[in-house]
Length: 578
Ligand code: ADP
Ligand code: MG
Image (cartoon, rainbow, N blue to C red; front, side):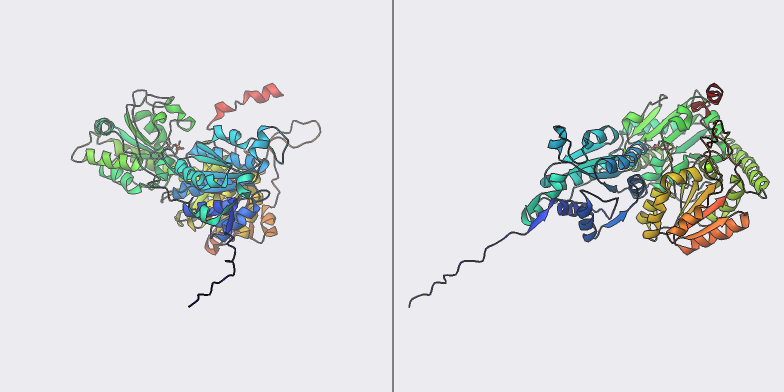
């Protein structure tokens, strides 16, 4: 029987195709990125839509620097790199400020920036938004990658993730060129590129001999203390730190972003005895902090015979500014495990009078502090301490609120006034002491944790990032921004030396109604001039879990030029200028 041969040709097979933008979105999803912070434009707009389509949240900002601050804050709070996406040239540069700040502060984050075709940049052809972004970013980040082909994107993303979180965390840059973003590939080939990187965090244990040495030094101390830095908060080893402190009865002094890692008001807290610790301790164990400018470089007041034990992931941090008697280089969790095991069964040589003397000093200092608040209680217009007398108990009774803080007096005084009880609930301008992190950081904290946030901002500090208050409103985040308005940088009474009536360099707008700025974007807003109004507004705002802005009217003469680093800005310069 004859067979019939089907003579119709097979339907043509067109492989499904995807773009580099899709590959980027999938690569981010594949490594577990949940949020991307950024500001779109050529050449990343479509990529942002695809990212959103992949189920990753895209938080669109008004300024890239703030998007970067948000990404960095997510990195600090979660140990997962925050991701910032920027357009080429200026957007890249704006974002790079935050990425550099993240590197300095050891926050893991990844900046992915659209970039012009590098072959055109290299030939200086004057292409659209021409800038050698890769080489511009390189000195400011921990690692940098350039994707010139879509095939490289998944590997760049996975390697950037590992670079951001492993060892000492930091900022990582990916130059995402237009040829890579626009490249078209067969989906089947693209799918083969994705992989899940193995053991990304890969904690490294310290050398056992270093652990033994550290324990010998610690157990020989008559006046031991522990200095907690934000590296200790970041590491999420809260229980191990608590065990070390409580089991061996060691007083602790937290750096500003380590506040709450152990309760600020706990019985072993030496928060109010900073000078005494510096001068009288004989052994200080530094956990995830650096002996930089914030700690007088380990010199000055510090006991010259002090022996430091330093726990840090970064070997190059050891002996910076001061010889370290017992460095323990390695991951904090593994280092503390080893130290606790080595300490087991050993006793401390602590002078029995040491802890009680610090407790007595704390009591006296706290009473003095309470008196300072009491003296400011009825000042009208309000002063910083008047407002903080109100804010302190409200924040302290809402310990789960994340406190964001920047300014000059507003920073110093809020940090000193408000006790924290939970780890990683305070983010401030940190190592570079920069201004212009507050709003971005508030957004990152709210998005990354889902918790309520209160930002205490100086009026000048708020000015750097105020427009992104609208981002808080668009994304309906539970963030309350309190602006301490004393009308200036430091204060609003700067002497006007101009011949033509210009304001003084430090003078802003003491009569500005920042609450109206909040009204423009539909926030719940308050203008408060008295402690009672402030108390009601802040209580209501936190409870509302809505975007809120409180304009806290202070006196123009409240606040002084920050005194802590006076030697960096010597007053006599003023005379020379005049
Ligand atoms: P602070 O400003 O609170 O003093 P720093 O940022 O100056 O804090 O110091 C943090 C230190 O913590 C850095 O030297 C960093 O290398 C270290 N660090 C960060 N993460 C870890 C970790 N997982 N284990 C050990 N050390 C860490
Ligand atoms: Mg001010």
